[in-house]
Image (cartoon, rainbow, N blue to C red; front, side):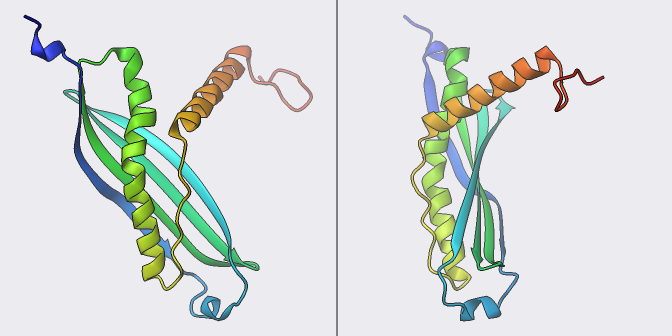
Length: 163
């Protein structure tokens, strides 16, 4: 009979809003503008081991909108989730934390961004779906490049070693 503690298990313990901020620095003038805003979205994913097979995964979105040279609004929300992962091989933990968990947390983040923006008096911003597998692979590739760059030594703009 197999030991149940060795059976792989994955569970969602909680999804929550960890941090949120909203700025409308040019109110009320910004509400009189007729041009559609330019929207910039930045996304980040992080994880922390909490011990005992528990992990926190966060997805942070920073949305900045501008009309002409004025910031219409800036909203930043960090959505978190606590996940229990047990009996999973070590090499599979990182993809779970970088792909599967963000896919679970992201819909809550999208809803909160749209809600915050609407409550600020603007039409909702609906964040596009994210391919977290591609995002994860890009981050891994960037980490490898950074590690190789550090291992090779730092060079200045002329290609000479930095001392």
